[in-house]
Every structure is written in structure tokens, then in C-alpha cells.
Image (cartoon, rainbow, N blue to C red; front, side, top):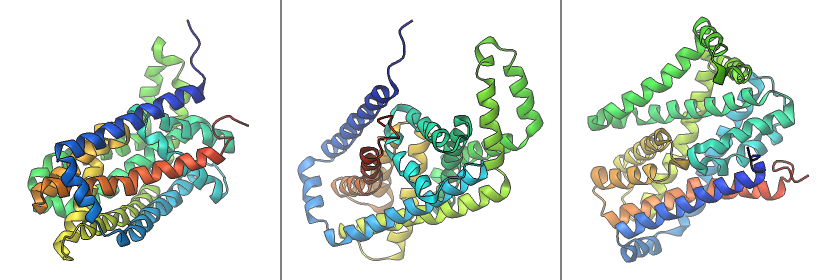
Length: 322
């Protein structure tokens, strides 16, 4: 059996796959909406809004970084705040790897820096995703009430997230499942790691930790919703409460759709959701909806990926380069 490729080479290949896929998604969005008209919309954008938009994105990252540090403390990983943030930001490019599989590397980094088993570190990654999902669903609630056609997807995703939390807190059930896994030849060798993962999940999904994480997530994702509102203002939409509320709802719900799709970075699913909802709910022309989608994705997802790559550039220890 051939040995697996070096982690760095494998990671680079996965990242390049995600970046190429992201480029194709953006290109497809522009082509479907008429490239020239989309380009005209982008050129007409009031770029004076950009610093505030990026500032709100950074607020999102700051609060989610605080949540990440809090989660690390909960599993016993006593890292300096600066180191926690470095690992958190370095994880941004991993979100665009196929199936987001690269995000498991954050567990390895946590183990390297704190000695906490990697499986418990992976539990932090899962808890981040679940708490972020609950936060954006909370921000979507009023929109779903106003537009009940989105209720089935909302209820399905909410139910799945709550089920994850519920199962993690029923220790006897988890112990039985793990004991059963020890009797399965293909699973037996991984049960130790699964137990570590479960212990981390049990701690992270305790009510107090979950409520604090969701509260931080709600404020942080509200920041990106406000940033999306500024994108729409920059494209000429009026300053109105309806525009603001729909901007927050559209971005939050599209974030949920992208996460539920399991596509790298939500690519394709999130863009289609944002552009489609802008057309359906705000009545925007397709070219303006596409321009708004491109701008907010560059100011959020791709801005974050760029910051993460900068951390990679100067964080030689994270990629095994010394």
C-alpha cells in the first residue's frame, strides 16, 4: 500500500481545489447575470463604504475568535489569547477545502500547542459550526416568519443542530454507542479518538457554554449582516429599515444554506441563495444581485481566506516548516 502524501502537499492540493472551485463559482455567477452589466454595477459601487464593510467583517472575526478561545479553555487548552487567534485565523483557508475536511487540521494545531488530544480539538471545530449555525438561524427567525416558504429548510437545519447538542448531553446513550463501536472491527481502532471527541463535545455543548457561544455568534454574524446592508447601500439601494432587515436575513439564511450544503466554504450554495433571495425578496435586477453577491463574498469569505493565508506565510510552525 502506498504511503499517504505528506500532509503539507495534501493540504495544498485540497486548498487549490477549493480555490479553483471558488473561482468557477464566481465566474459562473457573473456569466449567468451578464458579465458586462455585473461589471458596470461593481464599477458604480460606492467604494467609500468598503472600510466600514471590512471593519464589520473584522468584528465578526474578533468575536468568533473570542468564542474559539473560550472553547479552548473549556477543553483545558490553556493557550495565550494571541495564539488562540492565530490558530483561529489560520483555519479560514481550511473552510474552502473539499468537504471542509481540512478543518480537522485545527485539532492537530491545538494538540501541538497545548497537548490536548487532537480529537478534542476537532470537537471545538464542530462546536464552532453548531453555535454559528444556531446564531444565524436566530438572526433568520423574523425573516422566516415573514417569508414562510423558507420555514421547512429552517426547521430541518434547526432540528439537526439541536439533535447534535441533545445527543452529546445524553452520556449513557453516547457510552452505549462507543461500547458498540469497540465491537466493530473497522471502528475499534478509532474508538479511543471518538471517546476524546465525545468528552470534548459533552463539555462544549453544556447549556452555559452553548448559550454564551450562541450569544457571541449572534452579535458577530449581525456585524456581517450590517456589512451586507452597506454593500446594498453602496449599490444604490435606499437607506430603509426594510433593506436592513432583509440584508441581515438574506446573509444569515444563506450562510445556513451554505453550511448545510457541506460544499467547501458553502461555495455555490451560498452565492445562489444570496443572489436568488435578492431577486425574489428585494426585486433587484439579476446583474445588481450578482454584483452584491460577489462584493459580500469577497468582503467576508475571501477576505478571511486571505488573512488566513497571511498567517500561513508567517506561521512556519503550523505547516511543519520549522
